[in-house]
Image (cartoon, rainbow, N blue to C red; front, side, top):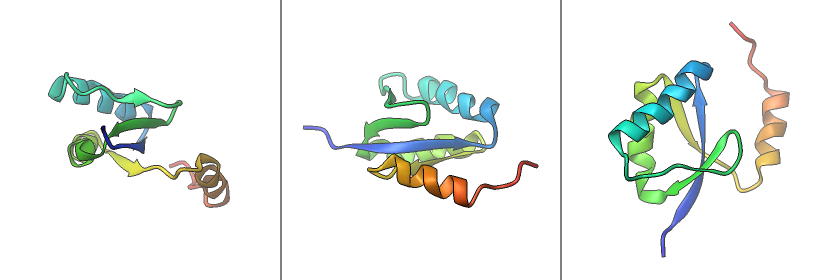
Length: 84
């Protein structure tokens, strides 16, 4: 049985976040990122290092997502970064 984890893909902006998906599909066409909602995806645990490398190439990050997404949403509201 596979060991799946939740990740959040955070990009510099929407263009770069979308670039992650294009580059991932190009480099790993046999590995599908399973969308859970707009920001979170389920992946095989052993793909994380590859996903982090691809996201870095696209000025983005792949973060382990919490089991309770509302908690991260709360922290985003409290510690929101100013748009540059």
